[in-house]
Image 1 (cartoon, rainbow, N blue to C red):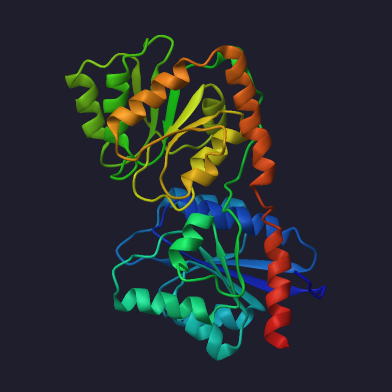
Image 2: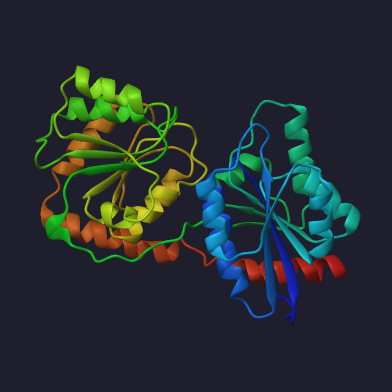
Length: 357
């Protein structure tokens, strides 16, 4: 990716937000930290509030503490226009038609990062999203699975894969104090909450040696509580948590991370977090999880109680020596998967070159 060195450039990172700290918000904040460390680069975050969602005070506090300049805007507002005018290059998350059109009219280089699958049903929205793809100077997909979803008939010039890596934290590996299975995620349909609890019940493992800790927030929490109580499940602990603070230490105390999604995960952040602290993954063959969970994972079929129960039993049966070897390889192999986010700086320079040629 040849490029000219720019002594100074303004980078505008635009993202939709539902007002809280989620995967896409975590990505852009981490990216902004990485990019603003590049000499001569000035970064500004532009958060487009999704209609019907309010901004959470905890999220605003996090933005303030990040020390990254930001503004919160509405779709198609004057503030979006002014922010794009300020920028030397615009990096939008997903494929917002209003941003793509403004960048085209103002002749601003545009990079898109796609984080989610494109709906297969043809509608005005999908037509506009695909038009936005064509208008961009570069398209970045967080997994090959997602790339194939958006470009099923051949890859466009200027497309590439860069996984959207969360901010990772190094913690000591203490195999002697590890125990059981861990689920971390939103308690919503498609994340496999129901499948996991039913599979754990069916697996009939020793609840003392193989407990199940489930952490997260969402509407299925009350259902999970009722299921555990009704079936008198031993070894299951349900925690409502926003994942802040001690998350990586909690992950590192578990023997296995379980990711039972069944809604075509674009990538899967949780497997990357687990592997970074040498915790191997049990995952479904679901979209990008086949990539993010790694070769050391135990895979099962999506939305299949029997298949997941067998995977839990298989994991529990692995002797300690082979388990530790697998766990260490889970982290080592990340170096072949993760692409440093500072690569985006080279991409910005490249599209500036291309657009001015």
